[in-house]
Image (cartoon, rainbow, N blue to C red):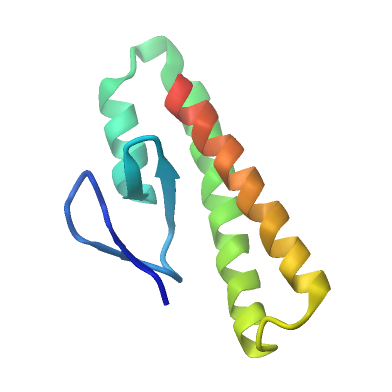
Length: 100
């Protein structure tokens, strides 16, 4: 499994954990959201709350599909396609959070 380092807390980030990628690198979901919350003006925090709930749900789904992909040996085209699609959605939500 892949292993990265969170640019916020410097702790390892492993495949199977909730994390995302930004222009700065890999980051734990909780580190990312808490940093953005701290840096945002009050009028944008509700947007952050909604997007972070969405990203949390997408990352949970991605982990579940990753587990299914590992169970099937990654040979199932349907599972691979679903994984790639969810990964794209996570990236889009991360981008929107970053742009707040």
